[in-house]
Length: 288
Image 1: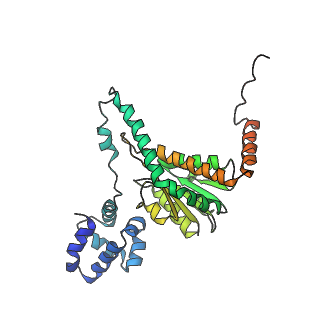
Image 2: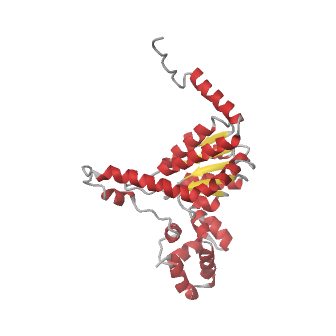
């Protein structure tokens, strides 16, 4: 039985104070997952101690455990990596193992195209209107954010990577101001830093573009626009292949929509990369 069904059965027997919290959890499960206990307490009119007592009344050790159960109700609880890895043991000589991976990649790409192609133009509009575009992705999604910034900077100067190096995440968040936009990527289990940056962006008045795996993900629930990507994999770890492909499609559209001026900027950026030695010059042709 899920948390919502359990609450409906128990509701009549709860005290008025706990009924108040129960009503909030039933009406706003997304906020229970995405917001802190302090925020939920403020919005539901309950103290932190009452929230803990509410969770324990339902049989949980505390609020974090209740929050995890609500996330599971929303379909956000991932299968453990260790259990997934168990299915791979002893299959190294299986000739179908690698083929399975590429087959799933192809299916992920098709699924991602179906889910996100209709939203790509709106995502472009959101980014184009921004004074500065910030991009964030942590752990497995760092390559998604880095690739986005690296390529976008070839034809737009006002693009910044938020990576938190050297403990600088809070400092980098302060650079986001009203009129900017944030592209943030994460999939279940969702990165704490990704959610933190998204919340900071909203608080600063920025528009948020989420690249994520579910419309019910904490990032999508905060976002102004969402692009979904599939993460299925026969391996123990979710795949980001479709996320990278989605990013490339987004950049392709942004370049196309930018028109002729983008050609000059890309030519200039590429020439500078060769002039500075960042790119190796091709060897001279031999012969006449």
